[in-house]
Image (cartoon, rainbow, N blue to C red):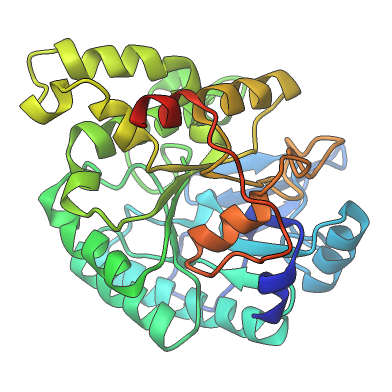
Length: 351
């Protein structure tokens, strides 16, 4: 991956939609079209996304993606599955077959464009042992850079059932990217209030990110797997705003383990997590940096998504993000770029 080694801007939050032929019995989609008013729609299971183009877009056309990357000044992207296509609640056998075919297709894209593209595998989280096995295949045989999963698949992130997956990621020295997904695509419907005004995406993802952070830390996942690298999408959701409250809970609530009550314990664990810069406002990005520092931040854009902003690179001017991305992916930083300073709450308290 010569391009990854020398890239100045590396986008770590960039989804790709890949259609794979799963046969006539496959009923989960995708299906897509255009409303009478000309607005595009995209359906997966019982969930329909409106206003985001599927065909003839950077999501599905690699040529258009590369042109859009050039126009935005993005040297390299790490592609991950759309959260609409995690399929974390369909029957396990179907999920295993789907993930295998999807990862094969992504690997071909990466192979054909290795100077601009890396890829994160999709995993059948219904079966954690199968997920660990597919991660191993995706990395060792297909050359993918890690995996991307959702936050909800019927097991808590700190479940002992997932330890084989976390252990496999450590063994392979690859990251896991965690991104929220709308409820009800192929599983439980979730809170009906979140189905109005796209609140499942607008605010639900932020809540899911913070829940993931709390579960990984409070549940001892990072302590059990000290080499694990996890990146939470969208700046960790509401984590920066809640960090102080989360620290207090770890020290004072009755469920907290003794180790978590030690001064600075929560901050040390928080500082191990990674976050992308895909947040909705420069003030939010400044707050993320103030709380978390920059040592574990990577550039993220939700490339070509509905919330893509005018300044698509979202924090690319923060020193060291490209080297951070290389470290997240397990590669040696470039000597040409400055190291990122550790200035946030997590780093200050962990020191």
